[in-house]
Image (cartoon, rainbow, N blue to C red; front, side):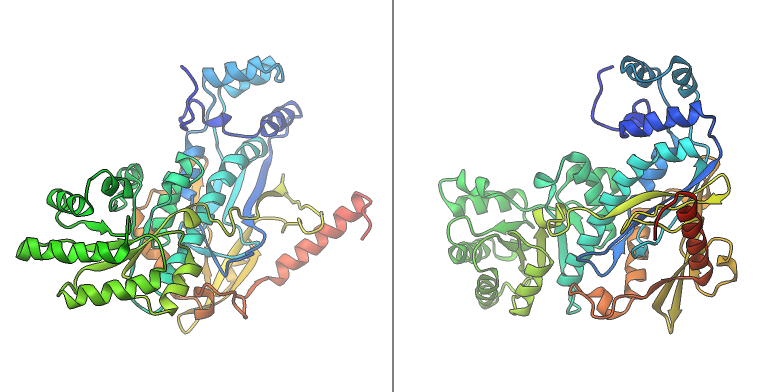
Length: 463
């Protein structure tokens, strides 16, 4: 069977970096099969006040079906890197470990484990690349989309934000998973038809300039399109925006009581000024119910600017800058060993250290508002006040009830509820003067310091 670029069970283990497989063989050769603990977390927020965790569902799908088909083993054999006995061992490989994770849609902060994998070290190691790929991207996409939605609704108005980003996103997998993540963050619809089918996301769209240009007259294009789609949104800026608005007014007179056009779309020029002029003309013609929808290189900052100028815009189509996370196209995520064979482990490298051992995150509330997160040892978590964020979602390679697939709308609603519990400064797009408090517990700090000191002595590392 030819290799396709779509993830499927028989090629899933090849979606990894080569060094994961060479390390897997080294662990096998050294008979290192004890349980390891790996944490997936983000080191820095950079241009964000908060991140929205996303991508767990795809991570669990991968782990529960992770196995090496004959096709995959044969390909690895052709590389000349792997021993025959190891390749035979791979034929019976599966993921048998435990996974702890925060639910999708959970607000998270630097150094907090989003996912914690506890499994034989080779299994946990092999999972690194795919888990980072899916969770890093989807968390980044959801976090960017959250900011766009926050900007569009900052004044309390319920404005639609639609995902128009597919055509410039970085491949079809990004467009699919991005649409899913952005919907969880509050985006109301997508132009991506495949994502609509796959995830049950509402699909939306207007018309392109090419459709208008293909007609001899703009009015002919409007007449024909509304005859086919009576409640459409008409794109009015192909030639002259205000002339396009006049044609919509004229069309309303032609259709009379049968006129159902839902809105007009502005896609160029001074959107704030044009929106005001269009609103005034439409209202004067008795078309108060016709909405104004705007697109054209929008992001949270541009939307904020438009609304601050009083632009009477009812919805936004946001594409490239949201879909590619243009201001922060990646997260500084990491997947680090924090324990092996019952002993805490950590990295000492400057600016890239990590917290050793199994952990939990406790979120504390005051009068219903999120006040502080405490990263603590897993052992002390039960005795601490607050809400634990990580739960066991996979046990011995099988999903638990907490890890079962959830309806996307339930995840979306839960994400909105959780975000609304944070201080207002965290919910704004401007950098917060008072970042949300995240601290590590005394017990975890003590463990970190002990492990660090022990490693420095053992490895002869200077302070």
